[in-house]
Image (tube, rainbow, N blue to C red; front, side, top):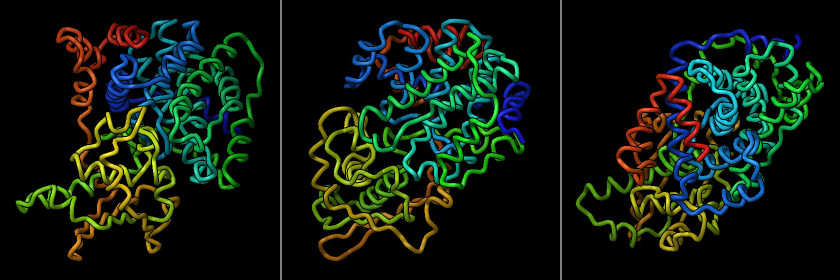
Length: 438
């Protein structure tokens, strides 16, 4: 089977349903919520001004790069379990950058987004967990191809040109997890979106490229012989992956691999206070904190002793301590710049204790859990286990997340943005696109 040809047929001819479009609307709302504080300079960030000084032409490639960076800069953006990465911060910047050139109808935009997420999820399955385990950053690598697929749909390319576009994008796909904890991680999202836009421009210009075998070669070269390319096309859209397993929205501006640990710490804090005891009594009496998880469950949250706010997003130690102290993971404690040094003494008491009796995380990340145990001076132990599935079941209020992001705007402007985010008309998507361009 020519995987690229079959995939291109699906991209061109399949039709996302109403549920997929509704899920896409929610995804755009979350995208605006996580990118707006960076674009409006509401949080410390030296990356965007630096990028603007280098990519000053204002063209679609530059727009895609800066939007991708801004949306991923806080690590507050959505996640997709099949993809094992952040699809919207690559797909939507590419679509919005193109929207600035050629206004699309609202349904075409939403369908292209849903198609992009479908390809992203399938790429994650086809590449297997080995792709990520080998050091690749899926958002950067697989995201380049997913964004190219979304653009192919938005541009209404035929099957042949779609295959060419996918091949050009695939040969550029790159990005290493070694950059986690630096500004290059969010830059990966921008670069992936930029590469997708460039691939689309080259395709439209008639640039020649292989129409088969490229995606297969990429998967074979980056998955340690465990790739399953047939998963790219089997049972397409049944259900649409933007619906199930769906986009996971973050409740905290930290690595998703820290969230159930943070929630376990929060539950321990609440249980202590519910007994009528003081927070000071808890914090002063903790002698040891252990956090257990499946083997390999900390592959993304790999930083044990962070040196700055960005690194802190990937530190189980810092996240657990911050939650115990503040009952929240505050954006200011994970922004660019110095650490909150009030957190570090407690973070130093956290030990990682992988549970070797649990199935390795690489086999099934959906079974991930964190077991947080607090040991007090008198030997008392307080323990709380929190699973990834429990975290997902609680959900995230994306509307509230958007209101928080827009809190510094005037009432009139805030209401206008919230109305446009309902995405009922083509004018709504045009207004959002214009505002994102600044």
